[in-house]
Image 1 (cartoon, helix red, strand yellow):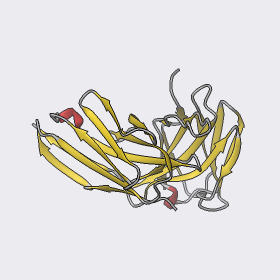
Image 2 (cartoon, chains in turn brown, cyan):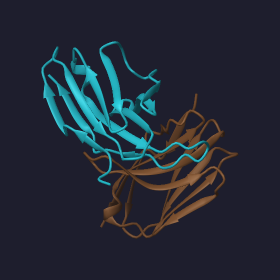
Image 3 (cartoon, rainbow over the protein chains, first blue to last red):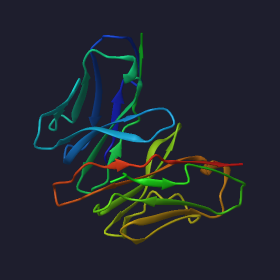
Length: 111
Length: 116
């Protein structure tokens, strides 16, 4: 059974810092990995999708990397802003086509 | 497309009552997922439909929960009878599964259920 772990569980940083959020998974036979953002009381917004054949994806200040063989992904956030405050979740999908989620990293960026 | 649409956004009901949650997936998507989110357990898959057929319902807690997908544009999750421990946020998500070329999953805004 696939298990997804996200470290750290919570993070509080001053504005302007560069951040790295980590996601690890136990079964490397995945089709893709997806990073989501969730604001309090809201749904999940897709940030980046990395297919298993890809090593990284970039969108604006966000960069996600994937090392399938070691079962790891990182989400890099450059020059963090208070508006980045949210919970970030990663999900991996394999042959079952069902996304399996980690518990998320709760991020606070203070001015 | 308006995205995945769920209704209602909030539901407060008394223990023992029937609750029905509704979901309209993104047009053209062939996969639909129901998840439940709680502080204790995070996001848990309840059931997965592919082409309107339930493929994996191993996450459905017990017989009080049932889900249907009568057509490609509509799904329901029903709880009967409801209990306080069912209080959670229920999310519906959809995607287009094509062989190994699985695409992004898109989530609705969720239904916050409170059973008193």
